[in-house]
Image 1 (cartoon, rainbow, N blue to C red):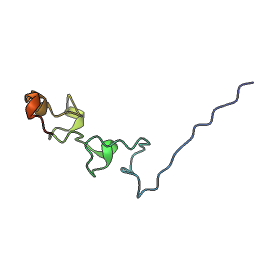
Image 2: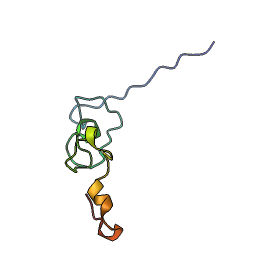
Image 3: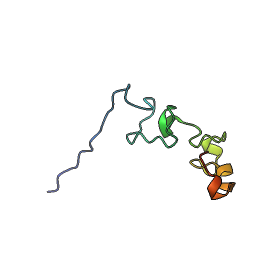
Amino acid sequence: MAKALIPMVIRLADNADNCPAVANADQVNTDGLADGGNACDTDDDEDGVADTSDDLPFECEAFLLLPIKQRKGC
Protein backbone atom coordinates (compact mmCIF):
# COMPACT_ATOMS: atom_id res chain seq x y z
CA MET A 1 0.00 0.00 0.00
CA ALA A 2 1.47 3.37 -1.05
CA LYS A 3 1.71 6.11 1.50
CA ALA A 4 -0.02 9.37 0.68
CA LEU A 5 2.30 12.34 0.35
CA ILE A 6 1.40 15.31 2.48
CA PRO A 7 2.46 18.61 0.96
CA MET A 8 4.65 20.77 3.15
CA VAL A 9 3.52 24.36 3.47
CA ILE A 10 6.10 26.95 4.42
CA ARG A 11 4.60 30.04 5.96
CA LEU A 12 6.50 33.27 6.41
CA ALA A 13 5.59 35.84 9.00
CA ASP A 14 3.87 38.80 7.29
CA ASN A 15 6.76 41.12 8.21
CA ALA A 16 9.18 38.81 6.31
CA ASP A 17 6.84 38.18 3.36
CA ASN A 18 7.45 40.51 0.40
CA CYS A 19 3.79 40.28 -0.65
CA PRO A 20 1.56 39.11 2.23
CA ALA A 21 -1.64 39.55 0.18
CA VAL A 22 -0.61 36.92 -2.41
CA ALA A 23 0.70 33.39 -1.86
CA ASN A 24 4.24 33.33 -3.27
CA ALA A 25 6.42 30.79 -1.51
CA ASP A 26 9.41 31.51 -3.74
CA GLN A 27 9.48 35.25 -2.82
CA VAL A 28 10.96 36.09 -6.26
CA ASN A 29 11.72 39.78 -6.73
CA THR A 30 13.23 40.22 -10.20
CA ASP A 31 13.85 43.97 -10.02
CA GLY A 32 15.06 43.94 -6.40
CA LEU A 33 12.83 46.86 -5.42
CA ALA A 34 10.78 46.92 -2.22
CA ASP A 35 7.54 46.83 -4.21
CA GLY A 36 6.16 43.48 -3.14
CA GLY A 37 8.24 41.17 -5.28
CA ASN A 38 6.93 39.72 -8.53
CA ALA A 39 3.67 38.58 -6.95
CA CYS A 40 2.58 42.15 -6.15
CA ASP A 41 4.65 44.15 -8.67
CA THR A 42 2.57 45.08 -11.71
CA ASP A 43 5.64 46.21 -13.71
CA ASP A 44 8.53 43.86 -12.93
CA ASP A 45 10.99 45.42 -15.37
CA GLU A 46 10.07 49.02 -14.43
CA ASP A 47 9.65 50.07 -18.08
CA GLY A 48 6.28 51.76 -17.54
CA VAL A 49 4.32 48.97 -19.26
CA ALA A 50 2.16 46.78 -17.01
CA ASP A 51 3.23 43.12 -17.01
CA THR A 52 -0.20 42.10 -18.31
CA SER A 53 0.40 44.21 -21.47
CA ASP A 54 4.18 43.73 -21.73
CA ASP A 55 5.59 41.31 -24.33
CA LEU A 56 8.73 40.95 -22.20
CA PRO A 57 7.60 41.59 -18.60
CA PHE A 58 11.05 40.93 -17.11
CA GLU A 59 13.13 42.86 -19.69
CA CYS A 60 12.98 46.48 -20.82
CA GLU A 61 12.40 46.47 -24.54
CA ALA A 62 14.18 49.82 -24.97
CA PHE A 63 17.16 48.38 -23.09
CA LEU A 64 17.40 45.52 -25.57
CA LEU A 65 17.62 47.97 -28.50
CA LEU A 66 20.83 49.50 -27.15
CA PRO A 67 24.25 48.23 -28.23
CA ILE A 68 25.53 45.73 -25.66
CA LYS A 69 28.30 48.09 -24.43
CA GLN A 70 25.68 50.73 -23.51
CA ARG A 71 23.43 48.41 -21.49
CA LYS A 72 23.84 49.51 -17.90
CA GLY A 73 20.41 48.68 -16.53
CA CYS A 74 16.85 49.35 -17.40
